[in-house]
Length: 209
Image (cartoon, rainbow, N blue to C red; front, side, top):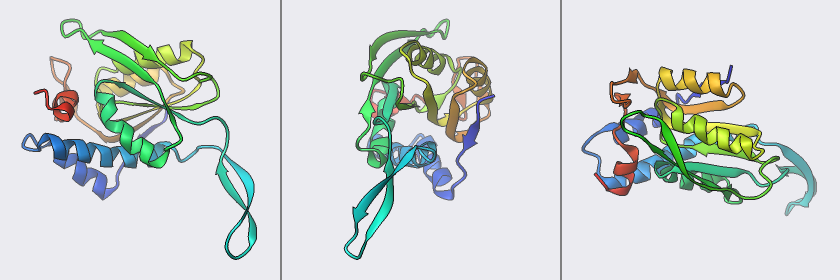
């Protein structure tokens, strides 16, 4: 079963309250999502591989450690996943960025892919899939399906809020994918939206309400 990590830091819960509030405007919503995504990135990257390297400090030579292997890859699920990219890049400015576009049929709730654009040689990269919410799990599962079909292996998923239904679906479909979230919410309503949730993250990020 895939490992699940819920962030418990007080600042995470405080900032999550800000983006849940329907009175929070677009600019503050966008900035707070970026801050929360930095917390997620900190947790999701804690097992990145390191290698030793000889350097000179102003005081003495030493053997230090730096990231090893191919540059990691960040994959936002379009369009709402774009709101989390800057937070991840603030910790991994060297990362490559792939894009996978998913749209959800509002009648069936089934995701449909409309864009896949990935860097080369993803087989050995650490891959960080990001999206604000894990609701039904359909879009995330379909995105990871695409990545694995292209050779991706070291994959994690990070989101702002998740619900048990989506967590269960993702764990069953991809038990090797670690899940990081700022909060596990109550449930999905009959329209497939997270309760209490934070509304449509894409619309709130881009001012298209």
